[in-house]
Length: 346
Ligand code: HSE
Image (cartoon, rainbow, N blue to C red; front, top):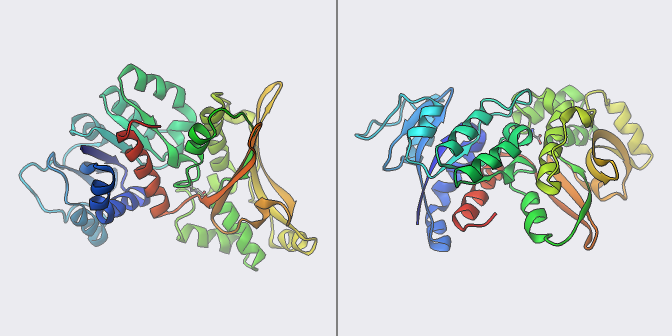
């Protein structure tokens, strides 16, 4: 089965996905019978490439490596370079649009309009972009239903660690009463590095260099990235849309190396804890640093790693620990959704 893809946004995540496809394409064909062909890529800084016969992905990666743009990609007879992101979404022959532009926590744009345009054009959407999902999931799901398409977003929380699908499929029949975890890799990396002796600014600079931080790192260090992930979890797990202003949100910005060292001397550790709890008055969300004992499972989660504990009525506490950011890890999240989409599963 041939499945045609268009990528909107070709930063770390898009490139990570394409690198995986280059390596795994034959295996995916053998294992799942799916031949993923990328027919278009559009990026606001690099340009657009669209070819109905499929792009030569190693050459796309080579061009970006050489110049940071698509300028070095060779011209072929069917190649279009002039389209903007919306023309690419509407006019390319893709079955599915992969939306991987940056997260905008103010209004979800341009990702939100990209998702709307794709669904309205009868194309499925797979995204790792938190903005459109946190702010517009109910509308996007309605659009998908109206147009006979689907929207999948596994990588928007904990990248390729499949926490959403776990709750939606594997825990079917159970009730999740509370979710509590470490959902921002950058903050956790900073706290871990401060325990090793770095100061806050040095640790943040390292997190940025390693590609964990958002385009605007204030979203990480002030807790908004984790807040957005709670907005997504609330909708995905409880079917309840909560407002961002209703989530008490405090980041790690004000924590110093001395604070971290003091907690360490008391066998405790700072962690940025994000939680959602089902209460009689609705879903209550909170993001804030907590000083937790070393015996807490979340205290043993270091670096950019994320973790999430589901408190389930029947199964008890289930904790998943895994990557929450990174080029290959987040690129892989797009692949999970693409395969499940082709298999007709969530
Ligand atoms: N900036 C995010 C983090 C990336 O540090 O966790 C993944 O959402």
